Image (cartoon, rainbow, N blue to C red):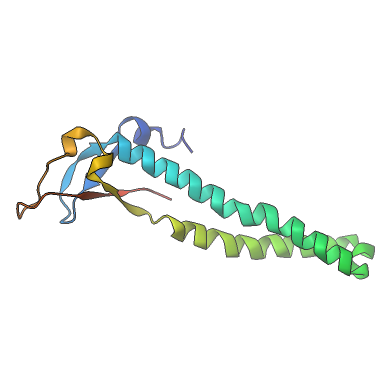
Length: 131
C-alpha cells in the first residue's frame, strides 16, 4: 500500500476547507490517510482470517457428518469465508470514511492561521483519505 500511494507520503494530499476552497498539499494529512487506510485493511481482514477457522473447529467437534465428508467440509469452509468476507469488509470501510478531516494543529505550520471567506479561522481541513 505504501508503494502504491508513495506520492501521498512524499508530496501530500490536497487540503480543502469547509467551503470547498483548496489550500495546498499536506504531507502530514497524506501520512495520516495512508495509516488509516492500512488500519482499515487490517480490520477488514481480521474476521475473514480468524472467525472461519474458529467456526469450523466448533462445527467439526459437533458434527460427525462433516468429519466423514471432506468435500462437504471444504464447501462449508468456503461458505463461511464468503459470509465473513461480506460481513467484515463493509464495516471496515465504514470505520474510516473516504473523505476525512484533520485538525489544523496536526498539519504543517504554513496551514495555521488561515481564514475562510468570512474571515473565520479554519480549525479543520478535509482531505481524500482513499480506501
